[in-house]
Image 1: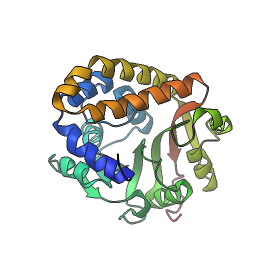
Image 2: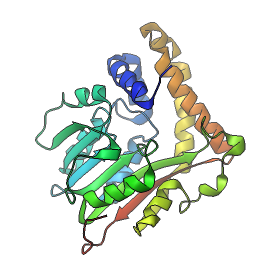
Image 3: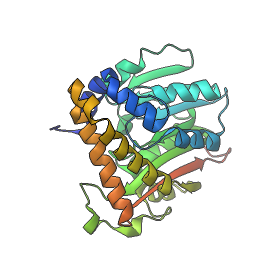
Image 4: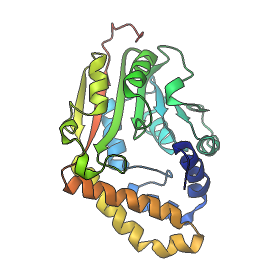
Length: 263
């Protein structure tokens, strides 16, 4: 149906914000309607913020910010200044509807971030590191951090349509073996990994139940493609978990205060 991830997200951020059914689904499943796409409900977002312990002095970059709802929530809860960036123009058009002197939004690619070294004290990624060369990207993210800066990365690793369950390499599932962990190790970045795999499975099961119950509402709007996409995602994650081929972690990275910000 879609020729590229960008095509998908352009369509998603065009249709999802105007779907009342999708808004109700987000509120029911995630706890807030931020037009979310992924598996980070508000419990995971709040766990991320508790781990980062941000303050109004922080300058945060959220990569893959979508339509900006989580960026705005971070700014609201912590007082930090938050810059969100996403490659989907339709998403950033939605984000620009929010007005705050603690928020800024840009259209851009994770692989070519338009910021200077040391611009940020914190970088947040919530399910956005799947479409990039991780080692190269982690190096660039490290460079953007000021000394003592930190990253919070929520990442799922598991079987998907590209690597089905039967051939998925389960040896990459432990927290120190996933693609982001390997990339962090390549730059000698110290990190902790919080395992949220069980929460991910529960989320997938509830996502499936919610969507099945809301089928008629999506159909009435002519938005079944949104339901079918989310339902396929939920069923895929649940099946992978049950086959021992799925894991999810919150990686917390902090640079030493004396580390220069060059990669």
